[in-house]
Length: 400
Image (cartoon, rainbow, N blue to C red; front, side, top):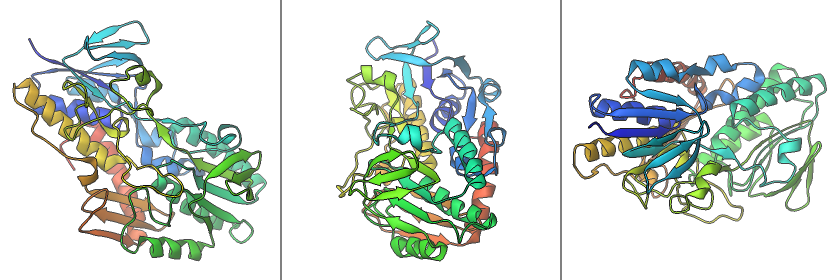
């Protein structure tokens, strides 16, 4: 009897894992994907959506046809419970699906309660729906401009998106003829500019400082946010930053339904994993992408998280797929890759400029790390968006 692999999630981690397992075993396995969302979303492009540079149809596609083309089943439902002892997953439509191997790739949800007033008085770009709400807020801002605050809260890890949105905001202010009239401020939990949640890279602090100075952007570093009022960000030291437009990146949490599986997840709902991406408690349960727990290897004055971006997510998914394939063949999982040892590969867009970020490891200690600024980074990100959407839509997960 063919083994059954169940994958929860359809985005970077889930779609990659599902197709990679199928390809590793040359189709000799039953793979089913479960998700409440039929759409793959190219999350990195959410930074452009509020400015009208993208809409949802530009950065999404329906995964069902892709999965069908590669012999993968799809259940359009949300998982509500995982029973790793019985090897069963309950769905919100009443189905109970059994599995031989489970891949949890359920992504994240915003931690909206980290800063009181965040959900009511600020906007964010971390989900498609929120980015569309931010687009509405930006149009209202253009009708009645004022000061702008872009912030990443205590515990946040997605600093790359915060910087990208910050510099794209500055670029859009220039295009609208508002740059000289609007005070733009960046508030971050990072202990220094260019920390990015990965400990920083050589010359990163000075490079980001140069970018900010050129754009006339003020900063508040290592700063917790106390709360958000209507039209003002209130910092931990009591400073009040008024704004007509405020975009805040919060921390992320694992999906709420996983919290009931206390032997699988940590307090934030992330699955505790080994370097094989098997869970610490069960050899037949894997977690990849944002759903996999990563320990923060340092302490900072204001807590910062770790960014779980696209490249490490894909790497994790392939490691998990190879290890599941090994188990199906009766072998021990032999592919190992600690999150911190995955190379850092990122392109930070800055409107009509940007920075290419490369390092031999996501987390220190490192041997090599470099930041390459210039307009080629902007062009590279534009090209990569088109390439990656094509790659995933056609199921070419074996390509880089």
